[in-house]
Image (cartoon, rainbow, N blue to C red; front, side):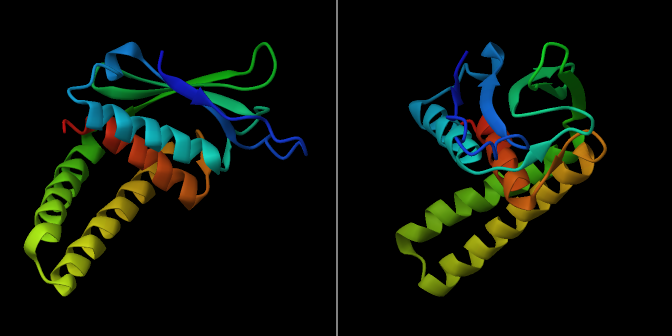
Length: 167
């Protein structure tokens, strides 16, 4: 299974963080090398700096993402033998956001070829706004299941985008 693991911090500050992310094999059958690259960068960025915890569970945590029954499945394993949490999120709240986000990204990539810098900046601001909205939706949907800072939610949303990007 494709995934990456971060080296645990020597100072013990890795308790409330993700140190590994793997993806279900069904999520790794990508259409292009660009899609695989975006997914790998998203995992690397997520592991490089994050804050992630599950109430009553001891970390650091390993996250395995899958899709089952049109739901995003978070299988989270922490330190200790019986330290596993699994929860599912409906993809419905993300579908419109992902569609809009990808449309704006396409406009951005087209604009950087010929548009004025002010137009490119306006499109990029819209892209960042949609990305921030997706991150907040993710935090809201995971509330009570997993807690994370906004930066981690943003990186997780990036990974969700990378999983749905068709190149």
